[in-house]
Length: 341
Image (cartoon, rainbow, N blue to C red; front, side, top):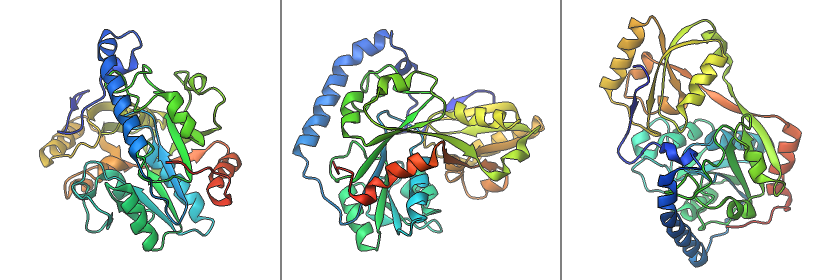
């Protein structure tokens, strides 16, 4: 198991030079990044965004890959639901074959059908998968949604967002500050912040992300906390694997819980696990006298029967300042948010 990595067709691991400001490769690819920006601006200029009959709260980010959007989307849905709103969640369904609009059924749909994040979302609230976000919002509203929370879609101009929150990983920030493919940015930081209502900074700021943000938008501080059963791993020998944006975050969470992480294996984000892969990891963990542990997002991509051999450590988002976070989330309801595509 060691520290091996694997990839799934369609999902490649972020290159290391995306985190290096002095990279010659990044400089070489910079013109391609300008072409990416031009295409995105043209798409936005030509868009005729749909305005849903209910508030739409977008949870997005500025970088390719994981930043913690899904836990933030679930936390937002929880906040609105606690105030009596019928919340529906909307996702593109990356990694799934369903185009939609399709309401996710956790009892029937698989990650191959709808993607992994929608299965996690659907366990908490009604969830729709739609490549056409406007059509998905329309379907959710027709099905009785009183508010829609979008998991990703900040750069998609087809739908007017009542409130837009940008999620920033405190351990990753904005990488080398360059646009795809020269860096991890989907768009320039300044351009994204101009359309955002607030930033959600997840975890400790280890890379100076707050300096890049300045004081242009409010910052909501938050952290990912393990589920209640996380304490069981204290003193436990653990073999861990993950196919998420930053597997090292998951391994560090286990160490912070007091687990002795004796082996790790990284996979590409959204990796679909084969039975042979899981059995090899089960056998390796047994040889190390360790329990095999993964994330909730990985668990929904395991083959049938594999969950009987793998432990799952779920995490949830906790706000550092619940009152302050609530004041910003409440803007979607009180009419103070501008509403932009």
